[in-house]
Length: 276
Ligand SMILES: Cc1cc2nc3c(=O)[nH]c(=O)nc-3n(C[C@H](O)[C@H](O)[C@H](O)COP(=O)(O)OP(=O)(O)OC[C@H]3O[C@@H](n4cnc5c(N)ncnc54)[C@H](O)[C@@H]3O)c2cc1C
Ligand code: FES
Image (cartoon, rainbow, N blue to C red):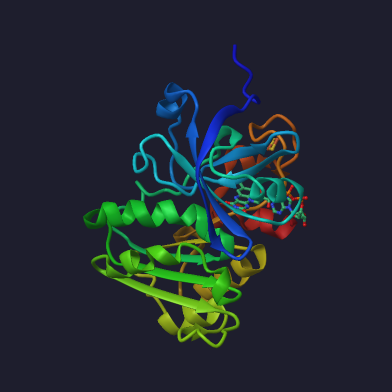
């Protein structure tokens, strides 16, 4: 039996700056069969390793089938592994294992109005959600996109904004906590934008991902707009080691975030959040 903790080798075919301190890595599996079998859905994650340094979990930010068998990760530089990854260049080799975890329930929410609220690097796992909805636009009702970052040079996937904004039956809004001289858009926290846009909860589902503090206040804002916990899907963050339910590093209560998550309906985690 193959070792599930052994990464597959992959070559970086593209490394580019997405924002200050955030890079996009496009990876091609060295074994094309591994690439063809790497079947994943929006919300799942994988471990990316910088050889000689270590590995870390990152949301898969590509959409299966869009890049042949290549996969993409958006990595914010915060510590040891991410700094080592940021030193890599196109042509270098990385390790990848996964895909792990569950996914956003895009099949279950067909026909509904979708409100997507993403902050900072939290847009990484939301990008394939947005792409999937846009490529299957008629399967869903109105799409309302709210994106945020602390400052303009931390906004990710900016080059895709025009495509997202132009999608049929879509409202697209961006805000930054603090603007700069060149910024002409909204300034203020994403919770203010949410209150201003005020999406109706009728036949709607809200999907949100971002830093824990943002999630906390977005959940509050959604509740104030009338969304029930069953209408809200979010992600939980935790430190992880194995990603496959063996090490006990990521458990919250009786659940392992790597297996039962990282995607949860809000009503499923109300109790966990109280325990946090
Ligand atoms: C399911 C999942 C998906 C993720 N997706 C992404 C993604 O798409 N892009 C991205 O940039 N990051 C993502 N992260 C966070 C990423 O795993 C951490 O930033 C990374 O492990 C830090 O490694 P490091 O060695 O560079 O940092 P370290 O040197 O280990 O630590 C530096 C700082 O980062 C914090 N940190 C370390 N690990 C985590 C973690 N797992 N979650 C939150 N904070 C952490 C530490 O507390 C410390 O403050 C994800 C995490 C999980 C669990
Ligand atoms: S990371 Fe090991 S059990 Fe979840």
